[in-house]
Image (tube, rainbow, N blue to C red; front, side):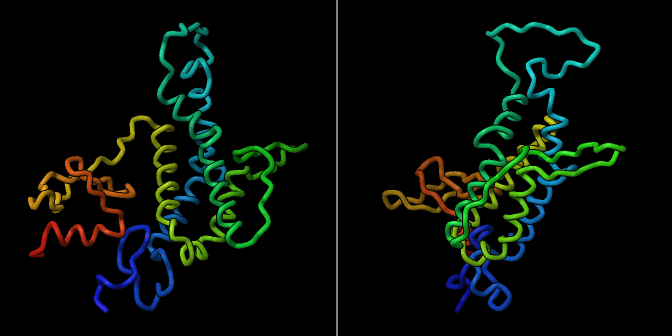
Length: 242
């Protein structure tokens, strides 16, 4: 069996190792990457906690105002801060916590487990008990991440949509980073070559641009799309002599 016929990782498109990764849908490198991203989101110093505590001003109407500055009324016609909107999107309904909990629900349904009941704050909380003792209470985000990490090896073996899951986790990490620090420059698309698709017996030839973390590469000229698992074959079609 040559590399073209061997199973490929649904996350990165690389050929799965015949021995170490047999029977899996995702490679171990992708598993380790998702594990790292999930751990980056969770914890008292994680990105989600930073988004909550350092991004408080971004969520308030007077975003960016220090304690010594007077409150300023803003006109309703003024557009909201992009940073505030992004923070609200990540923290609110449909954001980081709810999306990751939906993945847990999907995995638990397939596993036949009872659906979890999520309680408490979304974020990590550290309270001061009598005597100044710190009481640490992981939030829903942390508990959700713990469940995902516990079931990650299973997902890498059974979930054909693991690539979608990994890209969603990566997107949350990047969105949190750029919301906390708007000066961060996000990775841009890269030029990968010319479209090899044939249209009316002629090669399309349009320049193809790719986001390294997108689910697919799509030609803006002819509309042909290549999913991540098809990227190796696309590379061979664009560069047959290599």
